[in-house]
Image (cartoon, rainbow, N blue to C red):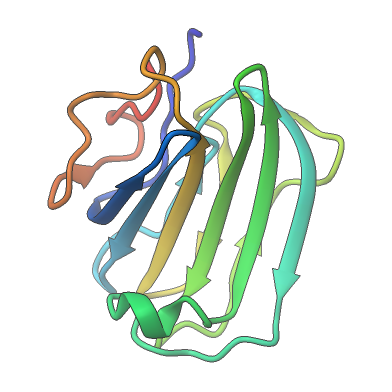
Length: 150
């Protein structure tokens, strides 16, 4: 896989959970961060869902903000489905997603923009060949530089 698995600008990884089939990565963006998100892997967009039923809790409060307004993008890859959650924060009232169902995407393309403090969660299939071993809780991910997939 020759992708540039870019996720966003200056996001701090807040949580990582892994089981036998998938890895969950939660990235927090403070109101001072750049809030563009990038496609993390080559593939085809199979679903984009804007869940407007959510609330606007603080994005870094993991349990509460799971119920926030969000956009869920599902990308089909040769490794399985990759889910990208753009989650609105307390100050956020708008999420922009630039992708459409059926679109072929490449890692590093702009996925969307979250206005002010927010969170981006990614669920990827567990495959040791594609997960960057340097990704850890507390690490910062810089758009255009940090690789999620190798």
